[in-house]
Image 1 (spheres, rainbow, N blue to C red):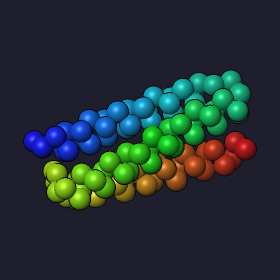
Image 2: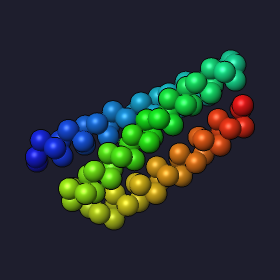
Image 3: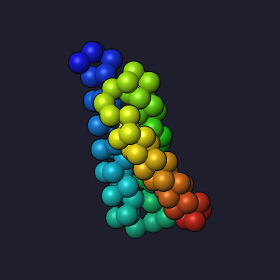
Length: 89
């Protein structure tokens, strides 16, 4: 495995994990402001995950169909969290 693939694969794990953890925190907040803040961090991490997946696809790492499916899931999650933030404002 090349250093590039290893780096972006590890970065994908960090950003995806961070997004999930921050969204979990957003659900447990007691104010809309805190919820928006944590959901915003989650959204940022999802966007970073999207970029990492695109890079992994570009270097032809892994199954292209699986990466395409993951990109679709990330796009859906981005839309969902963006809508949650919009509705909380």
